[in-house]
Structure formats: C-alpha cells, structure tokens
Image 1: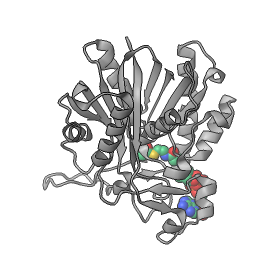
Image 2 (image 1 turned 90 degrees about the horizontal axis):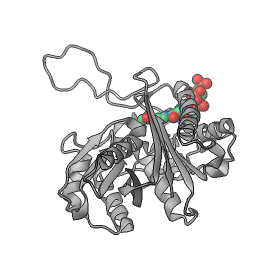
Image 3 (image 1 turned 120 degrees about the horizontal axis):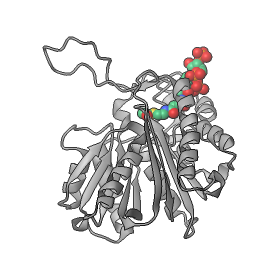
Image 4 (image 1 turned 90 degrees about the vertical axis):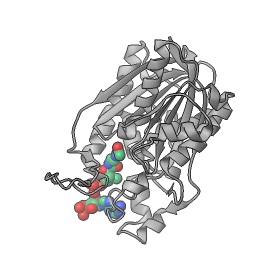
Length: 317
Ligand code: ACO
C-alpha cells in the first residue's frame, strides 16, 4: 500500500527582510546575493516559533484535504530549529489543532521533510492509519550567526504541511545519509553540565559553502536518476521537480546535468530563501495551488542538507 497527497498548506511569517536590509548588518550587497544565491528577500519570524508556523501550515493543509484534525491518526514533523526540544513541533501542533493522535519529530536538517514523509508513508503502508499529517517547520533564523555573511544571507523562516492517506500515488523514494560534519554542522554549544569537558562550538549553522554546493548538485542529480530508475522512467518523463531551495545556481547546475529545462524546476528561493526542512513542502504547496498540475503528472521532490543527508521521491498527481 502506498499513499496519496490529499492536501497541502504553507505558512510564511509576515516580516520581509531584503538583501539591502542585510547589507546594513554585514558586508554584503543585494547584487552579490542575487547573483551568487538567487535570494531577493526572505521572511523572518518576529513572534512565531517553528511550531507556531507549523500550526498555520497544518490548518491550511487540513482545509485543502477536507478533513478535520480529530481524523488524524499520526503527525510526523521535521525541524532543527524549534524553540523547545520538548514538546516537539509535532506534539505542539497536535495540541493546537485539536488532534489526539501520536506525534513525533524527525531531524534530518534540510532533507527532513522528505524523511518525515517517507516515515509517515511507511506507517500508512503498515496499515491501520487513514490520515497522517507531515510537517516541515523552521525558525532557522534562531540558529544563524547574524555576523556571518556567508550563511545569514541564505536562509529564511517558514513551514509547510501535507495531509496524506492510503493511495497509490507515492511511486518511489530514496533516502541517503553520509555522516559528516566537515561540510556543514550545527553544534548546540556546550550545554549546562558542570561535568562535561569536551569543547563544543557555539550554536550556529557552520558551513563550507563550496563543499556543500558540490554535494548538493551531485545528490540532486544522483537521487533523481535513482528514483527514476526505480520506476523505469527517464528524468525527462517528470513533469516537475520540486527541489530544496538552497541556491538557484545549485538548481541550474543540476538541471543542466540532468538535461532538463529550467522551467520544470519549481523555484521560489527569490522570495523565501532557504527555509531548510520547510522548503520542499512550501514549494510543493505553491505548485499544487498554481493550477498547473494535471492528473497523471509525475513530480519529483528532492532535498539535501546537513547530516549530510539527501532524499528524493516521485509522486503521481
Ligand atoms: N556577500 C559578499 N561576499 C561574500 C558573501 C556575501 N554574503 N559571502 C561570501 N562572500 C565572499 C567570500 O568571502 C569570498 O571572498 P574572497 O574570495 O575574498 O575570499 C567570495 O565571496 C567567494 O566565496 P565563496 O564561498 O566561494 O562563494 P560561493 O559562490 O561559493 O557562494 C554560498 C557561497 C552562497 C554559501 C554557496 O557556496 C552555497 O550556496 N553553498 C551551498 C549552501 C547549501 O546548499 N546549503 C544547504 C544546506 S543548509 C542546511 O542543511 C542547514
């Protein structure tokens, strides 16, 4: 048994922070950020946690799916930046929307939403669950070093949600992890223990930009080829690719290597920046609501990030 996507939703906080705003804070420029990353502006939360944003995305997905929160039988949320470790985003959303099902969080950085989706799909395949809610939500602004121009200009906050149910539309998936902190890591600082002697770097996204860039392009290309091979299609048979929004140049490089036209790739990094685990869910929601999708379209979602991790899947609309 597979799954179908019944409804999607997204939420972006109201505050817009432009590249010019950031140029007041660090040594950068609108021109550099547009050309090297593709971000024009991003949304930054001033009073909503990752869980608060996830609640709003969840409500929109439930409305689109035409079901109520009490019908949910599972919630799986992906995040690396909630205000609390416990209760998790899933548990906080459960309480806020009035659901009573089991809820838990997964952490696979920017690939987290696709890991969460695959986890929920496996629960549904096991049987006994009719409706599940899958969330990606980040207030990534809380874990950035706002004096580091090579990271703070990339990211933005937001949340996305899917309501899924048993069906035959999740055709295949592939998850990848290569445990490594060389390219990208997010330490949690030393913590409170008076006994712990090991040094731990301050809480922040630490990234080797070029190494992460190369990993990202390679993973998009490999993962798309793998999921296409798994169901016996060619990348050209895909109607759309919904990639993690990390850098528009990563998407352009991957499109060229795959021999696909840029128009097949959903791109909204200009408006929202990299919203980490929320990015694929937000982008898919935009595509689903655009009116462009036709019944039978094959859509690949693909993400990569800390871990290092990557993931891809193909959905039939
Ligand atoms: N403004 C102006 N100059 C800058 C900025 C900035 N914001 N940031 C870096 N520079 C400078 C550097 O200091 C360097 O200057 P130098 O040549 O004098 O030393 C120059 O620009 C080039 O630096 P690079 O690091 O080579 O720049 P690059 O073109 O690689 O862009 C970037 C950097 C945007 C980080 C890019 O490498 C990238 O997008 N990497 C991938 C990020 C990613 O995909 N992350 C994904 C996951 S995140 C997660 O999972 C949490």
